[in-house]
Amino acid sequence: MNTAEGMARVTQVHAQEVAPDATTEMPGAAAPGSGAPEPPEPARAAASIAPNAPLPLVACVLGVAGVILGITVIWFFAAIPVGLVSVLVGLVARARVHTYDDSRASSRATIGIALGCVAILLGITGAYFLPRMMDRADNFLGTIQRDVNQNVNQVNNGLTRDVDRLDRTLTRDLARFERDNHRDLTDLENRTAATMKALEDRVQKDVDDSRTSAKRDLASLEASLRADLRSARQDMATADSALHDWVAAIEARIERIEKQLGL
Image (cartoon, rainbow, N blue to C red; front, side, top):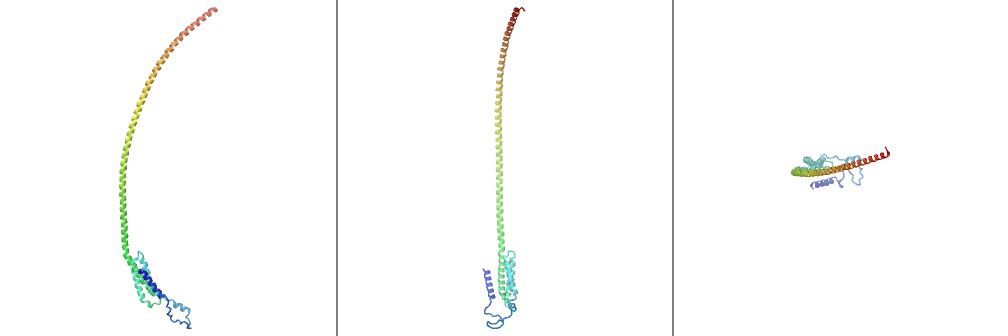
């Protein structure tokens, strides 16, 4: 608010000094309605161009430089001496303003003083608040770092506990799985052995039954064959005697035929 009021006041003073005075007459100018001849054009141009006052311009430039330095973060401390020099030069220029032909000297000196005060204020404010802001920023960053470290430690501890719990769970599950597999394999071996024993007994029984049946069949077959052989021998003996009788009858008939023929 002080900076804005100072700038407004400086602008008002500058406008009042620059504004032409309607009641003031230029020296050597003729009164209205007089027949005095006007000065030539080069003379009027030379009279209208006034040299710039150095000290007010230096004060204004130093004030602007001090404000620019004050609003920066790094060079704010340089705004205090630059602002002091701007105020001093502006005060000296205000004291010598009546010796300058430049109509803007007073306004420039006033602007330089105002900007120098603003630069000093900015430098003092930066020197006062910046270390505290840096301390607060460091404290804030330290707090964030501590919170992050604490959270990381908590996460690491939680992960370690979870990994240990998972390891114990996997070990217990693997042991139970091994016991179950061993029991299942033992049961499978026992059932397989019992099944093989039952199958072997059944096969042995079937083989024994087959042997008994085969022996019985062979005995009955042998008896049948012997009976058949005896029957065949009897039939052969009967056929042999019948054939012998038939041959003998044929031979006797042949002899009778020979006798009848006188052979």
